[in-house]
Amino acid sequence: MSAPAKSVLNESKQIERAAMLIEMGARMQVLESETTLSYERLIRLYKEIAGKSPSKGQLPFSTDWFLTWQENIHSSLFLNIYEYLSKGVSLDSVELLTKAYRLYNEQVAAAQIGHAHAHQVLAVRRPVRHRAVREPPLHLRPVQPAGTRGQEQERGRAHAALNRFGGAPGRRH
Amino acid sequence: MTSEQLLAEIREANLTYLMLAQTLIRQDKAEAVFRLGLNEEAADILASLSAAQVLKLASRNTLLCSFRVDDELVWSLLTNHNTPRKAASEATNTLHANILMASRVSEVL
Image (cartoon, rainbow over all chains, first blue to last red; front, side, top):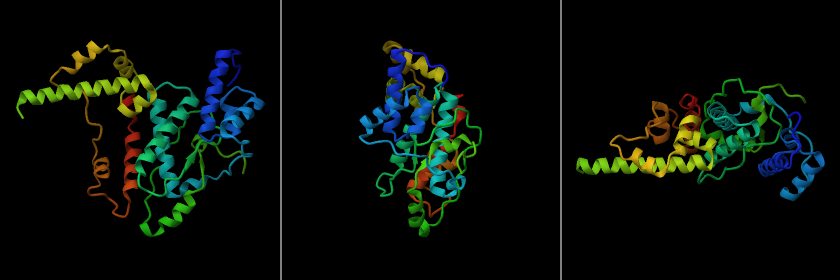
């Protein structure tokens, strides 16, 4: 976001946006890249909303992380919703991300009613790169037989970062 | 059921659909586009209709909403009938169907 207009209205909008992202579990890097607020204000806001200091550092970046079936299903669902919204409605990037994420969460919650493993698989953690997602959605991999599911679920506990869909290679390796 | 009753039911369904659509669009247009499978222009038009216009639109003998599931795979996933993979759990089937439904971008273009 370049050359932000200095206006009270804009600032209140930015604060609202940051608050929404914090509630979704976004880290400082996301807040810094998606809003125009200063680092100090973001820290204060974070503490006020989350009740704790933001966690430090970035999440490890690994492309084969998405090759396990559960994460793949979740990311395919999210990406499809994201693309649907990005093509169907004109929204700015943060709105697009948050609305798609909300819809994705809602669908997962609806699909997993009565299932114990309704843990979070995707989370808004990393900054999203501002460019259109060009890669085709990841396709569903075959679901493995029931015997190996426990093991898969363990692996699924790790959290994903949504910006992986940006398609850019990891900066930190 | 007489044909008179049937037509009354169609009109009622139309009215319910239009009212729901308006509520959804006015609450959050982007979400509504996704949920209804309408494009943005259609959503704008729907949202701008007055109550009288909605009523007039609803009181026709044709059903205004159409079916969104039109392929075999989504059908069988949603009904859990004839699933291609027996080992797949119901939750996975639902998610799979959701993925396929969410990929129908053409309906909003």
